[in-house]
Amino acid sequence: MARVKSSNQTELTRRDVLVAGGAVAAACLAGCGGQPAPITPSRVSIVKAPAYDQTIYDKVRRLVVEHAGDVRGKNILLKPNLVEFEPESSINTHPMLVHAAFEAFKAQGAATVRIAEGPGHRRNTLDLADAAGYFQTVPGFEDQFVDLNLDETTRVHPERQFSRIKKLYLPNTALGADLLVSMAKMKTHHWVGATLSMKNLFGVVPSGIYGWPKNVLHWAGIDESIADLHFAFPRQMAIVDGIVGMEGNGPIQGTPKHAGVLVAGRDPVAVDATCCRIMKIDPSRVQYLRLGSEQEGRLAEINIQQIGETIRSVATPFELIPQFRELRLENS
Amino acid sequence: MSTELLVSRQNRDGGWSYGRGTSRTEPTVYAILALLAAGEAESSARGLAWIRALQLPDGGWPPQPGFDESTWVTSLVALLPRERLGGAAHERAIAWILGLQGVETSRSYRMRQWLLGAGVPPEHEFPGWPWFPGTAAWVGPTSLAILALDKEHARKPSEDLRRRIVDGRNFLLRRACVEGGWNHGSVRALGYESSPYPETTGMALAAMRGVRTRPVALSIAVAQRFLGECRSADACNWLRIGLLAQGELAPGYCRPSGIAVRTLTEISLDLLAAETQNGKGSLWHA
Image (cartoon, rainbow over all chains, first blue to last red; front, side, top):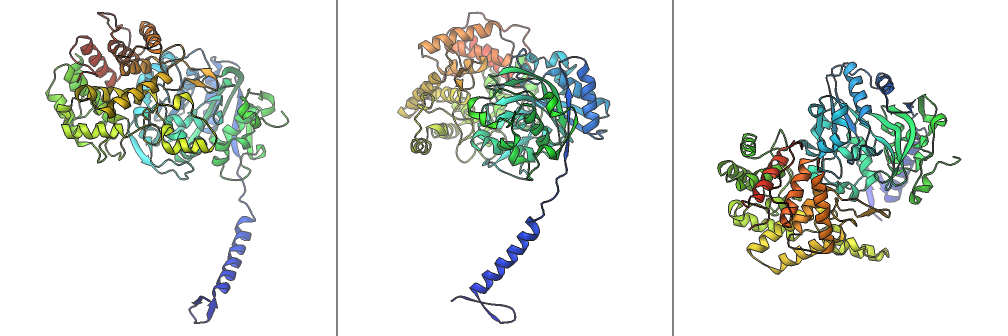
């Protein structure tokens, strides 16, 4: 039998060591795992916004005041979702919403407010923004805009990594922002169920390196890549455009869905979980939300502090393709 | 005017950025091609030196300095004139391109799919090229790789080149949209037919030079329609190049003045398309 000598030369058998080690591990598990750390509820605002009109400016200003904190002297980056040359559809984040956020952060004393995006399919980002109405809506748009697909990059090692991606390069404009504001569109997604503020961060991955589409993320695991990107940007805010979203075969070929809401907060996981409930999707069944939630129970409605409207008062079922019908929130 | 603008925007290290900032492979190659087509020698030579220094040990090129993996930009570099780039560097680039294909047509992937009981969908039948090694093939990088290999095949024919060009073109035919033209490479999503994009339609038409099948004929019609309603310089440039490759650009065509030329790459491709229209240079003559 193998023997190990302790410092006082008392002879211990391998069995003695294993038994002692097991006891220590059991004690540790009892002490460490028995009392889960309490969850600090994230605050999420739900605001009714029936249409893209001038009232949006005041609503967004209040959301910024409520959630962004002191932004004086800070560099703010607004990241809308720009996908296709179809201004009449509900594919892209509405330019008026982005302009409202731009004005709100400026009014709150931000040093710089820039708008940035890196579309996944179309190379001509500025032309896409032009077609989506951004040049018309945001004065001096071109001077405020950064094409993240072509930006300078730095290799990053996310705080937590779930995907199989080996080398993640991200744009310096996004990495250097004091606050990255993900301004997603509320849409269903034919691969991950729903695309909201977390999935919107696919747009920060530079196509100049990875291509159009950013297929590296698909092969590394879509849900896992979404979680990686979430942890790569610790200073975030989310404002989701749910005034007119998209249901069915989203995020491109779905149909417009009027939900009439804006949803905002500093915790993208909590914002997206709330959006899911508004869409009558069970957030606990969306894999990337589970990966991003870190703590058991963090996605639970009771652990998210809702401000403004209740979920019940604005919830409206977004049609789901058959592959995702199991995501439907029960009892809805 | 464009030539002077390109020269004035060259970085001190000899390369070009996408707009402002550090030199990158893609805008540098397009700037060199445009300047060479315009007969400029000094600035393009400095650009070529920058490109040569960036080649990786595997024969390919990274998208930017400091990135240690070869990607789709290798096909662009292989479009540079061999005598300017250097014979050895060019040959290694061609070898790198020949050794790459989309992972969905690899033996290991096919074996895995077979074990899972999945068949080979028509769009996975022929190998194309990915943007990034280890991922699937798409229309953009496949078109660029075909252009590079076709140019080399015209200089020095080989069976390896011919086979990959034919396979690549078959890949593109499988990925053509039902109405004609190409998007990024997704023909349909969940049963819905996808629509073509102007820029990828132009790129693929250039890669299909000399091929006249029904999908190509349909795509020429789509490209001509796109060109008539074009709002993007990038799209307009590639449509001109694609239609020129097919001999279908209207004689004397001029880019509408209302289209904004916004990036260095757009300036380069505009110049390259114009010079090709004048018979002075192209992406396909050896």
